[in-house]
Image 1: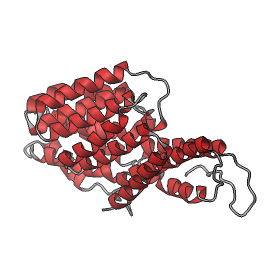
Image 2: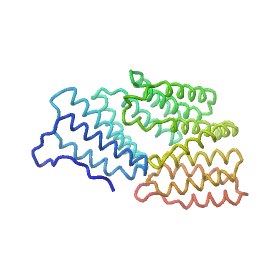
Image 3: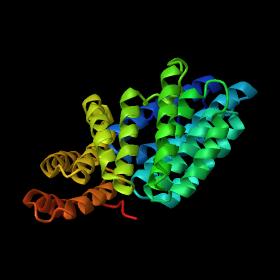
Image 4: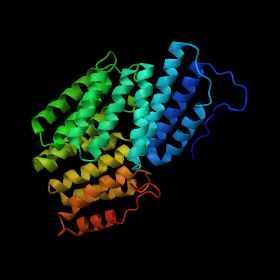
Length: 324
């Protein structure tokens, strides 16, 4: 159940300053984003859409600086709605809200948020197996992130570029970008991080590194799985319940990496853990990623456990009302 959103009744006189309005939106967006990480986009989307509808009735700001802060807060809320929509398979809606987020972030003058929105648009293309298109969005993001304080966002974008190049089979460049992303993340100051990047920790960098090498194992050389496996294992150990969706994605990738490396028993075990976690997530994206694990399991059709895993994935139910 979503915590009630405390917004003044539009039918009553209100006296809310712009900083208070922005802070209200930021606080609620943070809460909804935490729900998204923990339970999937389907858990927070209705609440986020309700908040967007209700803030239209809040008073505007007479001061430029205060108005810009509110624009940025509303932009990030639209950014969250775009991401949650994508997570449950509503890609057209996702694009619409990401476009609105870009316009609002531009009006608010927040280059780091613009960079993050382009990052998420790129991630959509990666999920859809369109790495070349993803690289275009990620490059726009890097241009926007080239500003003071944009180091963390830049490191995230570089890691996603590495993922895209791994999907194209460009192994050397993918590995170089992973190293650059890690170096920049380590060097960046932890202070003054915007809400949309605050979830990115060393655990996430490990998971993204494992993702790149798992992709290379599938598309270039199975031996890359031996690099992916320890990174993914460490990431799983670092994820707690608040990042349940990320942990599930990482379990899927770890299972796939074991399977491509010929460690079928380990792959089946990790795949079973991933299935158990997926059942608690309102995320079509997780269910769709499971299909790649199913394909890997089916390549080991002489292994009883792998056959059973593939059958269980085939029976997995997509969250109701959220199909493409």
